[in-house]
Length: 112
Length: 108
Image 1 (cartoon, rainbow over the protein chains, first blue to last red):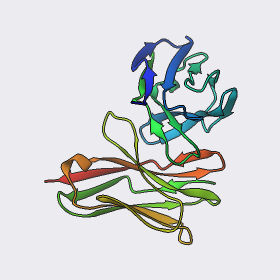
Image 2: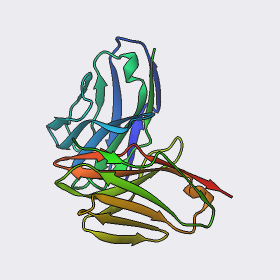
Image 3: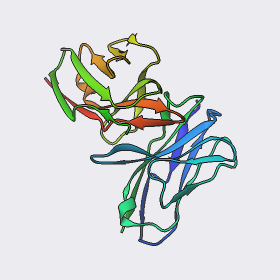
Image 4: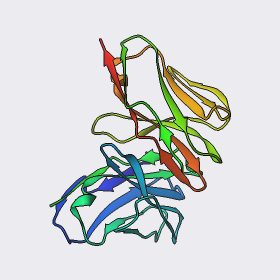
């Protein structure tokens, strides 16, 4: 069955380190999204991509970057991790449009 | 600005009906979506209203009124497994904006 996976599921890192979170989907969806979820803020869009080589900034993109070299993967990189980036990160994909998205299981990131 | 407002918490009794409202301060969006999220889990898509009116999917129904800037999710025959957070969301331009979520508590 097609699916969307994220790795690692849990990560502890130190302030200043570079961290990359992986997202892989087997639905062949063109659209992929990264969100962070924090208490009191709901889901906030970090970056998104509508196809290979396409990337766009979302609401809270500072300190994050993405690249899209193929349809299946959209890795999220924290250039220099900060304690404020401690959060749960969700990757999502959709076949077209933005309204019906399928989410991965999430990555819990703790920055010490 | 663009914002979605929904109640932070709602409590209902098992077997009853509950309505979760979503009001928005935005324009030019494509439609209203609803997602469910259980504790520790990922959001899962429930429904989407592209047009005004009621959409029904089993025990869940969703409604949209663009003229009133308002929508709601209706859950019938509540079951304990429906205890979760529910998020409304709109697609604007090429992005999706989520409300902050409504925590649904179900009493036996």
